[in-house]
Image (tube, rainbow over all chains, first blue to last red; front, side, top):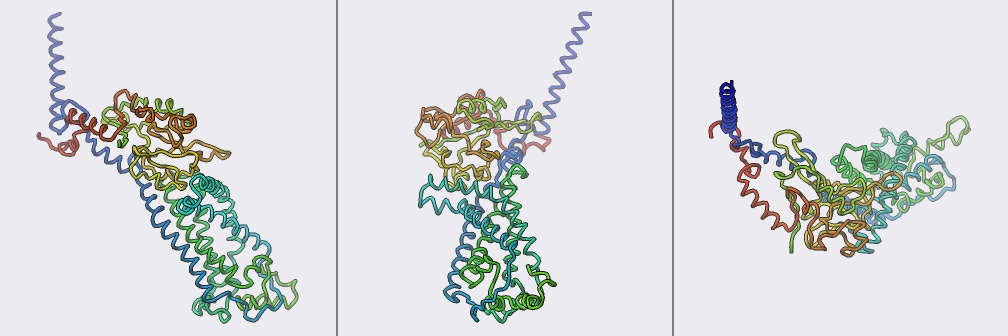
Length: 321
Length: 198
């Protein structure tokens, strides 16, 4: 019995050793490192995949984000806004203020309802605040730190970040309201082509337009499209936990910056035209009324349309917005 | 001048998380924040590897480039530090960082991001070395005491190395030389995996 057990043990040992040898042989045949050491697995492939972003351990997209933000977005965005300021100054020097040619008639035409004006100024005030705070975060480092130092700028930047984050959601309401209130009169019409071919900006008077001319319509749609893009991307940056991750936030941050500099550049032009550029325009948005001659010279078709129901009984026709 | 670097030897890291704990303890890291973390790859499978990750104190650090208030800087030792007095918690350094190093405590009524916190290579911050203000904001300044980061100092398997880049790479080179093969033998798998005859 003991002998049998002994033999059995030897056989068992032999089988075990043979099977180990077979394992090693198989391993060696497959080109693996003997002894099942760590080298059996090709680690370089693993590290290469990690370097390429596997497991989210190393993200290189941040490099692209940095390169875009500190590079073309800042550079070309800065040029674009600077160019717009320059263009406004150049236009003012060349053309001067666009005055009402036939002088003020003293008869006023209603142009903007209370609703339209409230929405305009709501959006305008928020836009300027958001633009200034946003630009502070993008360019303040280069502009303000050399002027009043890091400590004071940090206070300004903190204030900018906080107010930008808090005012952003309020701006979204403004964009929605602006779309609802202004969209009807800003739909493209056939007559718009005339305004373009006759060079509306340069030769006013002979060029007919409804309540808004082509440039105003383009500004409206640009503001809406940019407003939606800025709102959408802004919400994600304001509440990063709803985003799918850093990569999305990087992309949205770039879209946000590009959209912002474009719409700010356009707004510089809009503000110039609305204040210094065109006589009577600013009063129109403040009081809601424009002079009859102003209306005829800038928006002849709209002026005719306004004049007709005003001459007849007022109750039958719905008042213009 | 020394150029400080971290190196985690993945052949040695056993995912004990001792570095994370030591860092939290030594630097009194705020609640909810880990300056260092251990990531395990291929968990439970052959070829499992763990690595300990924190701020790598990059040359040409992306965070420095994108910080809108210029609060991040690098020291003569190549350690990347920042000023919590200037930081506005915008999160841009997190966008830019390849390693996810910057962390933010929740602050304010809407749980907005507080001031950024990250590994300092146990090098404190802009305040006077070893001052109470420095300790409160950034943790212990071991470098000023002539010591190396606590995470690497206490690593049980000496997987995590920290110190002058030349020293670190000499140690690692010696290790890979002695190992002979394994993951240190670069390209072994690619070269020999598919060949049936040796």
